[in-house]
Image (cartoon, rainbow, N blue to C red; front, top):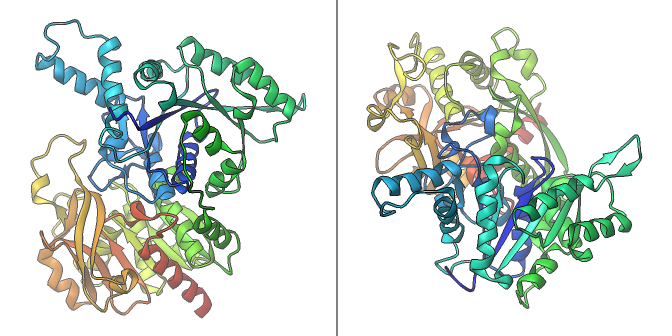
Length: 539
């Protein structure tokens, strides 16, 4: 354990979905702006080894890191705010903890001892708490504890946090508790009791929060802050107000105004002469809030009733829109509701169309109709992962006249498997963590839309899929106008396809949305937004 690394633990109370991830990312951004090296990790209390096998309706999108970890979507927020990559070590679940301990027990590593939650599970949790801080790369490690204080599944994590205080010492350990101050309209009153109960549960577990961050729809009067300070045993200036924000990207500046970073630095005895004013961040917010144009983009997928299933794509459009000084109105459209008759009506007001990633056959026909509409009506199009595969299937059926062309994922007996299972995937039985995952190189052809967007020909992008473009059909596709413009140099797999005589028709097998950040919006999204602006101007 690195003795000079400071550890901040962020817990949540009263209700879930208060935004612990955004508070963690905002605090990290503020400390980073003061010259500290910061990383954030998320500990999730569910028993899955990772979110890779979870339905997006259960848990939102599954985010993928450079090293191929399937992780919680909060890691996407960490990367977008800090502009630094995360890894396998930044997301740990209860499932992983128990799996590690049981594996050790089966190997006989506990020398015949009775294996228990305390100390064995809590020791394993603490080992993972400290892992990122041990190599000396980080001044501060922020750990977000998923779930709510009082949840039965969170108890081992909360106990591990209690123990960590004694491992680390008072100046290296801090707990920020995020809570809700509800407003009762009938009584016209803000209520502190839920927060008092939440802190009481933490105290019963042996943890005294150092800072309270209070989510509220209304400004917290001084008497409410005093009451919280008194009953929750927290210094008055450490009761931080977190009002609902216009955008999540406002939160770092709101937290700076509330002096959250100053309180943290004071308690952890962190000293620095650096205090950058987040000029790049303010510049981004200025462009985001003062657009000079406006476009409508259709996001077509099958999980649209839960927008978190496409969190990184939605955020990528915010970054790209700000870069182009354009307001991007995203219209989420269920692919199951689209057919050849209603497509013109559903898409008539759109300036661009994105077909989203996904798995399985449901909604495929609607996606095929979407691609056909974008292709034949010269509407800017971006396909991602399955979106690229659908673009290939549509082109095979309607341009190459390969009747019944399909992916072997949807139809194992298709006569024309233009998308097929990768060779190394054919004998895999376990579903978790076995796809083509993580960052892979790609070489772009010069003079193409993709290379123009990136401004270079060698790139690395993140993947999450099992099926690939079938190279046996490549010559046929290229003769008829769909070009493979991005190729993996090691495996010769097709990474990007484009249609030559279309204003902007680009589809990638990889997920560009995973690498878009506030300071580095993804070039494919930026160019797609610009193409949509040009399309709107022209029409």
